[in-house]
Image (cartoon, rainbow, N blue to C red; front, side, top):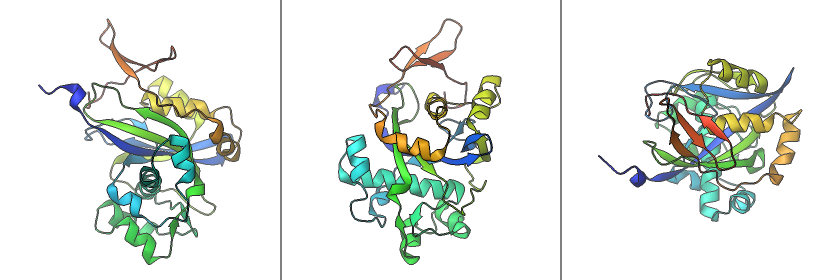
Amino acid sequence: MSDPTDVPVRDAATVALLRDGASGIEAWMLTRVRGMVFAAGTTVFPGGRVDPADADLPFPAGAEERVGERFGCAALLARALLGAAVRETFEETGVLLTQPPANLADERGEVEAGRLSFGALLRENGLRVDAEALRPWSRWITPVGEVRRYDTRFFVGALPAGAEALDVTTESSAASWVGLDDALERAQRGGHVLLPPTLATLTSLKPFSSVAEAMAAADDRSLSPVRPRLRLMDDGTIRAEVGDGTSFLLPKSPSR
């Protein structure tokens, strides 16, 4: 049996894509298909692992400065995190976070399938990553004991004017806009299975009355990495303890 401490920790980026709804902020959320190795069946924000090519996307000068400073990482990694966040948002929703704004949703499937590189798509259409569209929000490191581990940087981003998020990715069984209160209520009822970072992100957004207000507050948030520790309870359930007295019951899934 392999040593669980030998599982490599990979860089990843997640985007809480937000819009203002009739009853407050809404987030685009996807339910991952049950055949996936990691977090199968859970409801999540768009996101995924950083690819080396993400750092080579077209960026405006100095795009990585805010992200590098906030997450305390080198410029190359900051660019890769931004690139991954924008690429994954496009692959999983069809929404482009670029300057100038564009709608290339018809090409989304080609990028997700690997038949067209995201960088080539942007360059062919004269687009650059819109670094100002994203704000660093939190950082979570998957605990020891999981089959895959990630150092995930969470961003918040506003749905661009005129853009439409689509339920299209092959990695999800369902996707839609969900109000913050509704998402948390569904999780409490068992309708949504949320991992601790998703649950914590939704909860942290609740105090804000608009997306603009949440985006403006991002620069004041602590980005110290949250490193949950897994604890097996007497009843056989597993809790993730995050170090400040808070703990989350982990869902049962094929990944565990």
